[in-house]
Structures are given as structure tokens and as C-alpha cells.
Length: 257
Image (cartoon, rainbow, N blue to C red; front, side, top):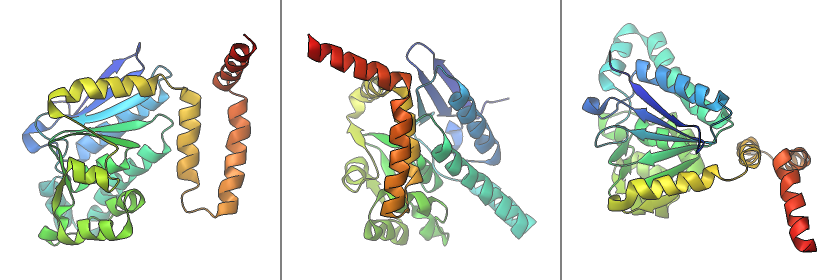
């Protein structure tokens, strides 16, 4: 039986690679893949060796979105089945936010509809120069409803509306210019550039990155006062970590010499 999600762990570098593995269906998200993906993410997050998770797709594309055949089956079963199917994908997006470990989407080829939402739900997006992004649901009379929560937090309001209302796909450079993508690397050097980036991120303080991620999403939508208070709590907590105390000691020792 084909694994819908492949896992590769390099304990030495602290990098876990999770690979969507339905290349014959452009890695379309079905219930089985979503379940396996959530299990893989949870296992990686619980592994103390892992400092960074890289999420990519097998074959020529990252992910074409939800499996439309499965959506049709859910519709035929009624509203409750459709709601359960939608909520399972929503749980995946929530898990990505709740994880301690940063998750980096590594996108080549197409990331469309729910696949674009999946990439955007990750903490960062690295794209090959030929990658394409978009929310074409409107062309099917559908709405990119849940992914809108992450899209709206990544790009400006008018850009978000343009993407969902027109359903056009955009290139990696355009996606970077509006904040949908963090870095674009030449296709010929994509794997090497991504590997270097992941290794650099994995070299950073795991506790500081994790605390920073949690605070960033915690203050989303909070008042200024609440955000400051939450920041003060994380500030005090970060001071107690081994990484921070070692970093301060190293800095002070260097200044004395």
C-alpha cells in the first residue's frame, strides 16, 4: 500500500522532511493524506531532535488542493459529511499554528487552492523560481473558505480579495512581492539553497524560535496592551532557558576579553 506521506529524519542536522506522496494526483489532499500528514507533523513536533520541519511534494507539483472526487462523495452523503471533511482540513491548519517546531513549506511546481493554503499555513514558504500559486476555486463556483484565514494574515486585504475573486495563478516572484512567499531560489539551485536555508534555521536557538513562534501567533488580533503583556511573559520565560543563559554568558565573556 502506498504511503500517502513520506518521512525522512536527519537527527544530526535536526531537520525532518515530510513529503506529500500522491504525485499521480498532484498530491491532492484526501482524508487519508490529511490524517497521515497530521500524524507525521505531531511525531516530528514531539521529537526533541527535530528543530525544523520541511514540507514538500513528490513529483512535479507541491499540492493541487483538495481531492475533488472525495469532495463530491462527501456532498452526496449530506451536509454533516461535508462539514466533517472540511473540519479535518481545518484541524491540519490549526496544528501547523500550534506546533512548537517551525514548519517550512518547500514549493516547486504548483501550489493551488487548498495546496496554496497549506503552504501559506506553514511558518515560512520557500519557492522555486518556476513555482505557481493561486486560489482558483471561484472558477468552480467554490470558495477558498478556510484557507482565507491564513491568506488574510499573509497579504493585504485587497491583494487577498483579488486572489480569491479572480482565481488567477501567480508566479513565485509575484507571490514574494505580496508576502505570500518568503524566499525565491533559482530552480537549478533550489535543493541546495533550500538545504542551506534549513540548516541555517536549525542552527538557531530552538527555544527562542519556538517561543517566538508561539508569541507571534498568540498576539494575532490582540490589543496592543495585551500583546505587550504577553510579550513580557515570554521575555521573562526566555531568560530562564539554557540557550539564553549560555548566550548571555558567551557575550559577556567576549566583552571582557
